[in-house]
Image (tube, rainbow, N blue to C red; front, side):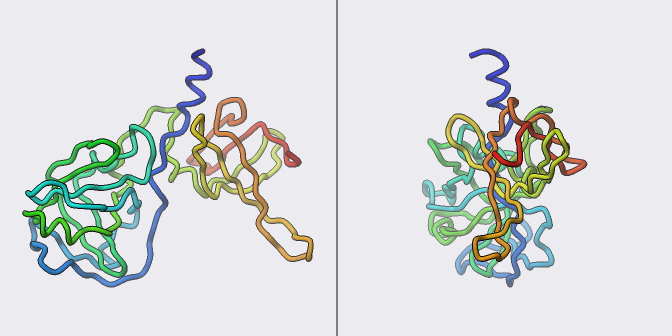
Length: 225
């Protein structure tokens, strides 16, 4: 593969979900170990402001309290945030809690990990269905031309002529590369305001600069495409 194509296809890293800050009350599954060194009940106030949902507990793993997690991101780096974070934050319904990550590793297409205070399979089973969050501050560092999807959502998109094309609402992985889904205000046939949509491949041919400080992406893309 030519170096240019390889660089273009590496421009975006797999998504680690979106920021989630929903109201709720604290709680913990019955039967789970708790305490300063174990599962800790959390409230909306104690929940980190930069918490990013990265996966969900789908099962117990083994007999010693490990849990199996399906990471939301696709590809080999899908569990990178789970593997690097020292603390995992858990939410199910209105219940919130957290625990120190003692160990974690890749297991097939999932991540398996051990949390402080979860000592056996029964306690691990009680965590099934919990969504797993990681503080954005604990994400692994990236190279200069790589980005986490969560950091691109909400950025303004303009073309090289300065025409505003909308804001990044989401990203799509089509297998070959990532695609920006850009929403902009439009008018429907009934005259009412609706959200228009542009799909822009996130590759170097079209994406010229990404300025996270200015919250702007400059693209080679016309408004009437």
